Length: 119
Image (cartoon, rainbow, N blue to C red; front, side, top):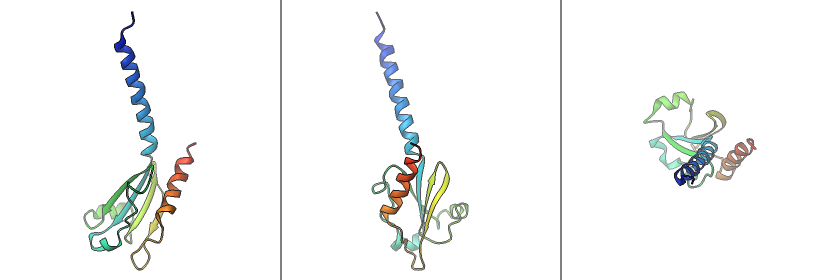
């Protein structure tokens, strides 16, 4: 008789492998919105994990984390940067009125294109 524990363990390992594989493809595209507390009126409301799909979305307040401003060379806020596997792919910066001219659909199209490159 075969031990059912090994079947359960094997199934568990397969599920974990599948989740790891799915998680790594999900995590390869990141979107970071840089802004500052004094510019909250111009936050990009559509730049969130609720509205952008298949990516990780972060918000960094450069007034609180000036080292991030230097690291990513943010010169105007808001700025949205899209990364794939840690490399910058696209950058959207505010105009003179401190507003981003890009829209959610444009950013989502870049994310979708980056994910499709792997297939």
